[in-house]
Amino acid sequence: MDMLELIKRNTQEIITEEELEAVLKKKSKSVYLGTAITGSPHVAYFVWVLKLADFLRAGFKVKLLLADLHGALDGTPWELLDKRYEYYSTVIPLMFKSIGVSIINFEIVKGSSFQLEKDYVLDVLKTATKVSINDCKKAAAEVVKFGDNPKLAGLIYPIMQMLDEEYLSVDIQYGGLDQRKILMFARENHHNLGYKPRVAVMTPMLPGLTGKKMSASIPKSKIDLLDNEDEVNLKIKNADCVAGVVEDNGLLAFLKHVIMVIKQDNKEKFVIVRPEKYGGNLEYSDYDEIEKDFISEKLHSLDLKNALAREINDLLKPMREERNKLLKLHKEAYPK
Image (tube, rainbow, N blue to C red; front, side):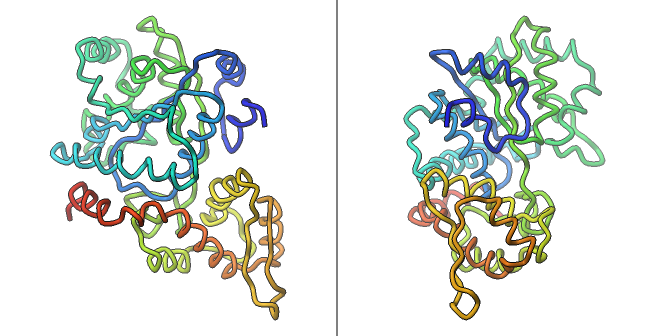
């Protein structure tokens, strides 16, 4: 697989592919993904961990922005920012360990380490004189929780994310499709400060276990990175997975965008363990084969659930090896 195919796989949109091709020709190239340190990380984070791994394999310097100030702008209590940063910065490298990817060219950057500098703050104020309230609200609509009485903070959020691309000195900003409006806001407004637009790479958002978006704020919709084996098994058992129905099926989506990517990279097969009286084991090397058998009901929901629970429990082993340490950090970051 060449570099372009590697970066393009499992993406939903790239703006623009021509610009991406130009970046790939550069000797030194970099990408960043920003995540606000709000909810507790869950297994859907493996989607972007795998994509960042693709960038690493393609020779990129990869920066993960743990956006503590963005977390505060989106409702995280100020007094918890350092605790949540500590938890995120500890658990996410374990996710790369889980998929067997080296992080030599991977760097974690704390947002407040540069976002409080004089030049950055001045650029925030300059941008605020160039863009409208409506522009900022539209840009942040899919990301910020505005509520019935929205705070001014939500309007500052996209301005800062736009500037992060420049101050991190990257060629590409990568994010989920929910980031699209902010990424376009950045491309449309960088010129106001004399900065160049960056390439935008987006991957799809996965439906959760209940058919809705997998979200840290909806516990039943997601599997937390610290869930134990029994919790994982129970959540998968209770997940929505109607026989033959692919649309909004969070289990199939996770299988496609996470498990089968790992299997193909490792040249392994996805195995459905079944007794001989029910036809014996099924083995798959391609997601499309799984979906075809699921639609035809050759592959039953319960068998799929059992196999997927096993795979997710395997993925979470590095976190479980550090469980006591992570639980302590998590308790401090997310006090009840």
